[in-house]
Image 1 (cartoon, rainbow, N blue to C red):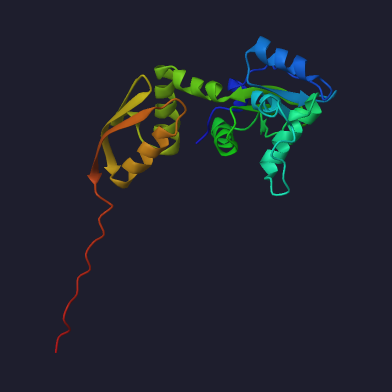
Image 2 (cartoon, one colour; image 1 turned 60 degrees about the horizontal axis):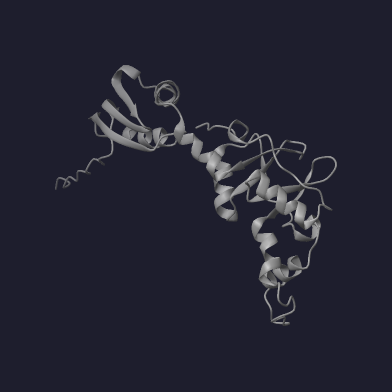
Amino acid sequence: MSHLKVSALMTRDVATVREHTPFHEIAKVLADRRVSAVPVVDLDNFVLGVVSEADLLHKVEFADDPDEGASILEGRAHRLARHKATGHVAKDLMTAPAVTVLDSANVVRAARLLESSGIKRLPVVNDLGRLVGIVSRRDLLRLYLRADADIRDEIVNQVLRRLLWIDPAEVKVEVDGGVVALVGKLEQRSLIDIAVRLVGAVDGVVEVDDRLTWRVDDTVTPQARYYRPLV
């Protein structure tokens, strides 16, 4: 099942900073662009790291005494936060290496990276590793603004006709606000679960209302028959 590419949803006008961009300029970029993080790039537009609001806020966290509570037993995350609190330029404040995604990756890959990394946005790079955009959780939610007619067209032509070899005349497909109703009769019962899963994986589908029936129940295992041998 093919999904929309990250390049179709990403923001191409990306605010960036350099390694030596000072703290106050980074804070200004975040405020002016109304974003929570910016990629740090070199002169060739390779992503070196990401500076987020959380990275900058460590300076507030340790404002009274950067060495307060310092201990050899201090955890790595806390030591890193303390180090960032003393930083004045992007290279000392950024989180590196940055988690990035290819522009040719599909949106499912991007969503999984966002979830597993616990971040809100991903720098998008091309196959050379250069920054070409950024994709956020909000961008991925735009999938669910997809037109019902486009969703129905993909289900009919890609799922039913191409993948399952089902005559679209056998199944009525209705889409309303991303909710898909499937009405009709399939030849085998086992095809129903497959069809529902594939339709549910189509970009923009919120829910599948399965009203399908079948002609042959191929999920029932025939009971074995035992015969007593003739004596």
